[in-house]
Length: 419
Image 1 (cartoon, rainbow, N blue to C red):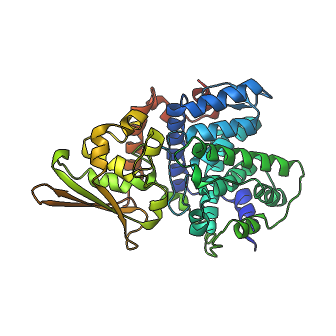
Image 2: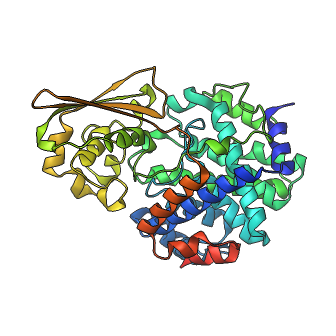
Image 3: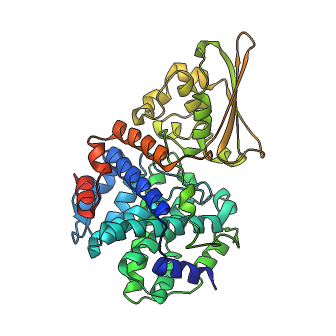
């Protein structure tokens, strides 16, 4: 069976497990919080104003705005939800799942009048599909410069849309083939507004491809395979093992710091250490090699760049800064003289023995004392504990977080996002 056939069958026929649906609900609520908190970011204002000025059929909600045609609304919402880079991450997928998939599912669910349960199921189908495609594309795809959030995310967005549109097997295969011609996104955009735009373009591509397939447009039946070959994919033969039975979305990681997820293990390790910044002589951070091309900007000049800097975020943590606060990642903070001086004593080294979710920190003080700390983001976390952490995050970011957390109908969720 081809991988396209496997994915199509998964999109059309799979029934999620309760645990996987609960994890998806947590990611959905976290995504909504990120949307609300980011809806006045410059990127959000630019895209929303442009979209609303162009107009079109009012069929799907725009975050902080009105309604627009479904593909355009998906693009805006995807970009806005990733504007703060505070959304969930999947390390096997090597990217963010929710920001490409949920916006696609939301606009199609509104368009067809789906129930909240069907919407949530589609979000999970698309997110799981994005993870599996991300694994199939693999490290080579990412390391050469493609952004899995955008590329694998477009396939996931398409699967979610196909599920809600009631696609049959042939239509689903066509949708997968069609989205293979639209999926795109570059890591070179990290630290700019175009990084979150990648997520929006993934959502838009998925919706458009699904709608084209439902209208009868044809495509190659080997679209994903061809995409992998032309885009430096690893073609991991095991990527789709257990699809529909084993849910890799249960491995998703949620952010509790407002920066690149590659920095989080280090920040959690530093939270275990208490020092006077004036006593610090050097800080050595050991991380997995892949993060060196992602979040090792040694001298960031802007708040956006600071979100991808070991040195800057380590300095912020050492002086007691709140790295969970969005406002902490401003241009002014990136240029603060005390932080610039402290980040100059930070060095970053790599160790293949670490996983991508682990980090070690060694701090040397003026009196010769050495402090060591380490953290592993893969350490098990119960769903209840995760929900409590996400609720605290939500309460710190948006008003009426408790009310948002209790939403169980699509119309109410859409209204909150438009407000």
